[in-house]
Length: 447
Image 1: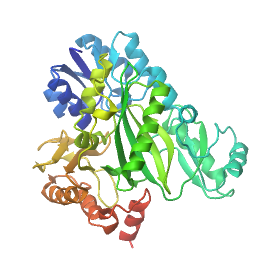
Image 2 (image 1 turned 135 degrees about the vertical axis):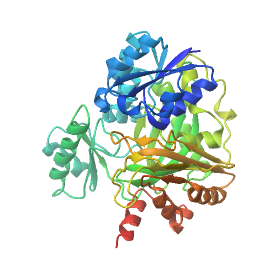
Image 3 (image 1 turned 45 degrees about the vertical axis):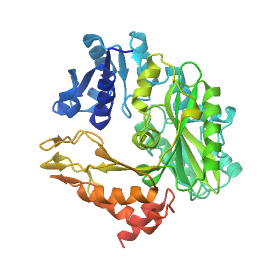
């Protein structure tokens, strides 16, 4: 097992990784920007190294600085968390070339599944269901030709895309040229490549993802699905598991398809396969080759510490259990709490003057916020995750309502009022929603 792990991230995920390491008897190194000198994970880590100014490009995306920090402190592994360099194959390769273990898949696996075009090809070969789609589109004429084959509406996607960027919808041939140009421009501004491709656009799907773990000995398990359909601008807001849209037979069927596909691909460590689900059918979208923001709800219903398993797998340990050993119990829901205006979603950085996190049975808060902490304006606005578990979905909803009422964050605006509005709606209570529901609901609120 590793003796010292460097955490190449910030915020609540850095604290999450620190906690897993300490429970395993592993020392930690926190790296931080100048703006994060007072962050909780920095205060709790065994060692801390400042790697640059506030700007992410100069700190959390600064590969040489992070690797230098690992070498100076004698860290024998690096955990990238999510975001930043977590899916950067070049960084993973640099880490390995310096004799340090990257806690995640291999660079080759990251390249295969990180490029959405090659990932789609690999998914088809591995037996995963996919939507009708195109190869890379070099010209708008290519796009028009493929759209005719696939049938409108279509969605143009950046091959290196993520976080909802580089995605544009065209409902007809008149809209396609502009959608193609905008998707390429957004991809060029946000990702290493401006290459785009096309898929059939499903009109009213749910967003369902499957969590997997795979060791270096060919053992693969799935940890069930998460329903991530409550979204705004392709950004997840609330997630739950299991999905209220699936029955046990569907759950077992897609789980086994995913497990066999990962075996065939030869992937290792933790990963998440994302699907669109409509009219009883699954369509593979992409694979995230990293820890997911919403991993705690899966931990809540399986009892498996996913970060701990990532570390064990990277160290060369076998899973030690099979699919038959995994049991699913109860229900769990996660709310992403952002420091934002709940109506305009404008970021609201500033000083926390009062902080009280809810507690009680089945309540977990992942956050590194504390009273007196100043939220810097340079990074993602998510400041906490409220994770609720219960024996049933209804019990979970009742507990979630109580926990949101108990949550006190003063000094900045947050999205807690929005979450309270969402969970009070009959469609959400009944589990009757798709990926468009939240934006439609918010549009009605503004009328």
